[in-house]
Image (cartoon, rainbow, N blue to C red; front, side, top):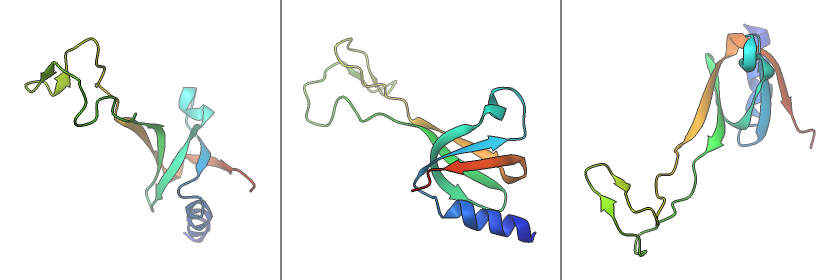
Length: 103
């Protein structure tokens, strides 16, 4: 589809930048997704909508209470359970609008 090739080319120019993509779905997803554009393919667009946090307890720190069985820190003084972040995958057929900064 020629129109999609043009759209994919336009969207691909903004990889690595923060964009908002509105979808044809209803509910909260119809309000759009904002995040860093990671990739654009024939089938889907991927946005990083929530980046993971940096580790609180780097190697060599004084954190104690590491539980190897659960791979987490059980010490209340060391919060090392960081979220990994979130990626949203939007089917290209559901894209209603694409916004980006003009600069």
